[in-house]
Length: 326
Ligand code: PMV
Image (cartoon, rainbow, N blue to C red; front, side, top):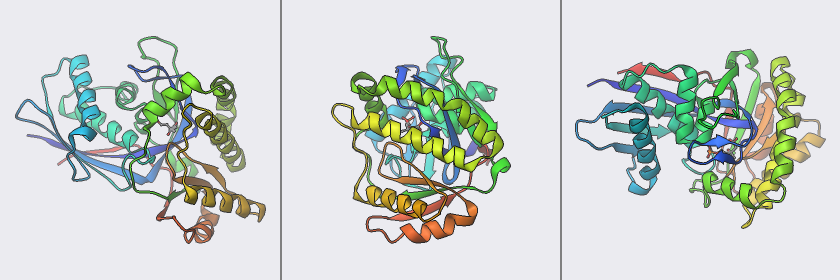
């Protein structure tokens, strides 16, 4: 039986996705832009199962609750492609799972790629991105690697809502994202249910949609021109708007802890002292700092001793996923 090993990377949005226009097909309310992070890797080995059930292990754990949504995804894939195959999946992250570090993005992207290989589906990159999207929205952006744009699309069947590569990682090798880990526990409210509550209850949601959509074009220009200050300022503004949406959701979505607030305050202080660094966070307490290689280690030095900071990773932009048969 063939076994395939896939290495994928989580991605961090510079222009965020927070909310769906179709929850079954995972169609977003707006386009988003992200970059893949080489420090947040997932390695997944996959083979075909002999028995008619999936066997899934994530970080050496096989919990039926954790695996339920994954099996749901596999059932969807079997239905779409009329497959009779079941899978043995063993996935390992180099970072905490389900705590707001986008483990679902790298995890689901790997599984979509693995199914394509094992079942000989011969999908294009666009089709693979659409398939990964059905597992977890942001997984669509982990398929192409580098800098990616996930198109909102307008068709009801989702066939034009996929991520494409804007630029490979190599085009901007000095860009860094410092990932400040402030918790190893699973987040209380999943992004899936949190974003739906925001769509339904945040009075700020419509304003955010418009403002965030307007940032797409300047962000594309910032990436094309490798204009770090424009990229950082746009990303931070977009994060602040998403944060406002989260905080004005009922019940409120407060994903941050004391350490996250302290790290953010320290970055603001460093900025007034002449450092070029910008902040973003996602549906979790970790803080991500955008900076350039020449200041990355000095910035790490200024934050790693903050109480509650558990680990600090410095990441470059990651290339496309790697696939090999073992
Ligand atoms: O695809 P999900 O359910 O992991 O949602 C990701 C949402 C954010 O990380 C908060 C924003 C984004 O665009 O990645």
